[in-house]
Every structure is written in C-alpha cells, then in structure tokens.
Length: 220
Image 1: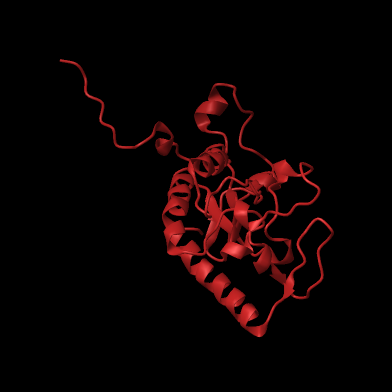
Image 2: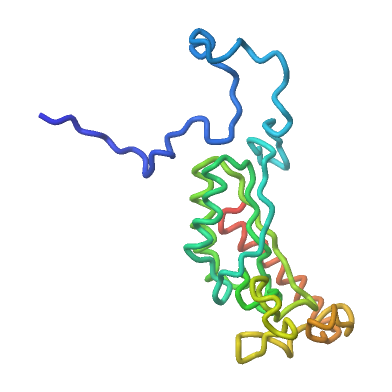
C-alpha cells in the first residue's frame, strides 16, 4: 500500500521555522559537522536584530520602503501587487511597506495609483497582508494624499508629453486638484485650487477612515 502524505499546510514554505530572514545561533549539529566554529561570541549584526515597535516585533531590520508601482485600476490592488509584495516577505524582509495609497480618489498621484478610500478596497489588500504574514513579515502601508501633485502621468510615461497632465477623459481629475495654496508645484503640474476649511476637514476624515480600513485589512 502506498504511503499517504498528510498535507497540513497550504504551501511548503508555510512550514519554515523560523521564517526566512530570522537569524539563529549555530546548532550543536552544525558545530559538530564543522559548518560553524562554535557559539557566536559577538552580538548579531544590527541588521538581523529584531526590533519591537508598539507591540509589533519585527524579526530583522531589513525593511522594504514604499514604492509607487502604478498598477491599479480604480485604486484596487491586483495580482501584480500580490506577487510584488509577497516576494519580499518570502525572501525574509522583516517589514514590508505597501506603496503610497490614496485616501481619496483625487488623493492619488496618478489614475493608476493604489487606493483605500472605499470599503471595497479592503479585500484585495487583505489578501496581500495575509499571504505576507505567512512568511513572518510585518506589513505596513503608506496612507497618502497627492495634494497639488495629483492627476499626473505614471513615472514610466514621463517625457512622453510636454507636461505630466492627465485629462478627465483619461481618468484624471484636473478640476479637483487642490492644495494649501493655489501655487503650482511646477510647470509640469496642474494649478491647484486653494483648500477650504471643508476640504481640510474632509481630508482629515479621509485619513482616519483609511486607517480604519487598513486595520480591517490586517496591516500591522
């Protein structure tokens, strides 16, 4: 009779203990076989020392900074984002920060930026967080608002037009770009309108609501 394999984990990597990127002292077996010279007489290098911040222990200090990827539609995370962020967790990064994520649709830099301004965004973001957590990564997210730099082209299209403007017909919001003053960032960007008190209050509330959604998605 053929032996049966009991599958208790979804993936082989789920069984890794400790998770990738976790520093360990040499085992007695490794020393006996000549793979190590004995217990490490010096402290772990700083990069591999864990760090605890407000209740979250990060297994090392190799952290992934937020990077705009311009790969969303209507703010939704996609399979690209799942692959992009999971790879860092799988290879041992202690903390992975998700890219600048718009707290309002007009708070994006480009029409292709990630968003968290509505509850429907939570599910796709949660999928990324849950998968990264399997590999021991702490997950963060950069909540952002583009201000006067909104409604522009994604980085890979810089230089293809005289300006960075994205028209309404292309998914932009040229009439809803605003900032603390009506001063243009530069001649490549739209001239913003000056924010009203109501605009400021709405932006503050949008950040608070986005933080709640990020928590619901499982971010640390």
